[in-house]
Image 1: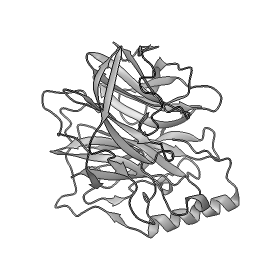
Image 2: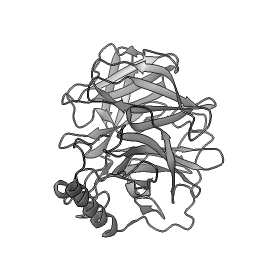
Image 3: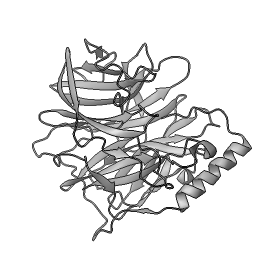
Length: 357
């Protein structure tokens, strides 16, 4: 995600700092106590992008969520960042749990006074995602980066961060590394769009790799692309692109899709009232090179701002990344303040942990 404001001035910075103190310290967001705060991930049947395995992931999905058990939210804020100057927010979190049960968190860190203004940073947890320690920035090329969609295929890890500039539509680059959290190198240009597209997510379905992305303009369109191989340039556009037209409530991806036996669950940002207002869940029932059909789940929207005047997520929530744990889900989410947004500035995004009921 990106800020729309210009450079910081002292008065604006002061107002931003007041907003941070007010919303961070005035309201505690503590999940219900747990007998054991550690949660064991379902690593053996989960590649981090939703490929169905012989042992199914928890069912039906992370569609009813509450603050994480034993978690004090937010778990990561801009104040935790130590190597990106005077950072203003953190957002777009993606999880990955390695076989040693170490939890990794990749996310955007933003500082409007740097060039580039945003990079991908990393935090770790050794207690099942309850408490987190900031590590460092792990990917900072010449582009503004956000939405670090992360997954594993075979023995390697992949990331498709959103690349953005104001001049021309940026291509979707696939990065690869042999071990987390760093060592990322670009290995393929999946899509070189003629329009501004944001927040690419990929998954396997029907024997193919698929990518979805939302238009970064007022048209609120959804685009699909596919290819037989992951590490390949110039994936084929869907025959009917855009596959969804004019749907501001659900066109821009808002987290990791879940691939199930009969459908694909996709999380979308609801931008109808304002950017990133809440998260909706849709099931894709038909997806081929010439067809696309989806429907909103009855439990949608599944993530939105808390009904409080103050707090880290009292305004908006626009991202959901689920990870299976036992018979449920632990999810990385982000949130923004509500009251005083115009006075304190709109960019106070922070990262939290939610669990399924």
